[in-house]
Image 1: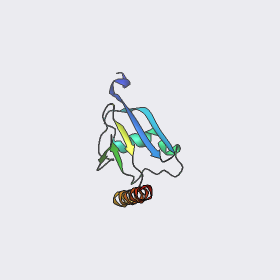
Image 2: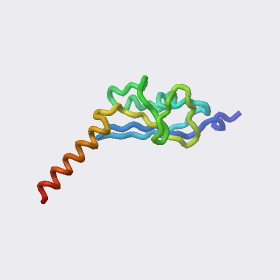
Image 3: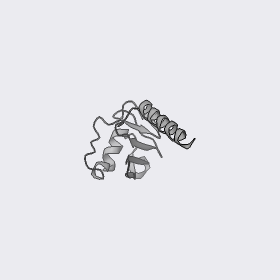
Image 4: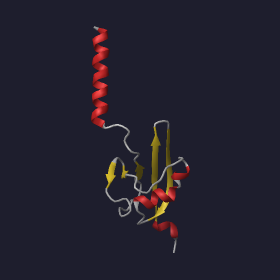
Length: 106
């Protein structure tokens, strides 16, 4: 039996503000999202990256249970880092900055 018949091509991605990495790999059909991330070795590319408990998704959509969700041919596992600021606060900060800039311009 040919082992490559049951293998699928996937990607695993992680990014920091100044560094990002996408790793292409072949995994056995039936591999979970979490296991694909482990198999990629991406933790060796980023100091301090620990996969346990990290939110993960596929193409921008969060996966509720990465340890149970199977990845499919051609999908990309994304490992999400914790937010450093609430998105609502960030929008408010940008709006305040734009308003202050507009006031200076007039």
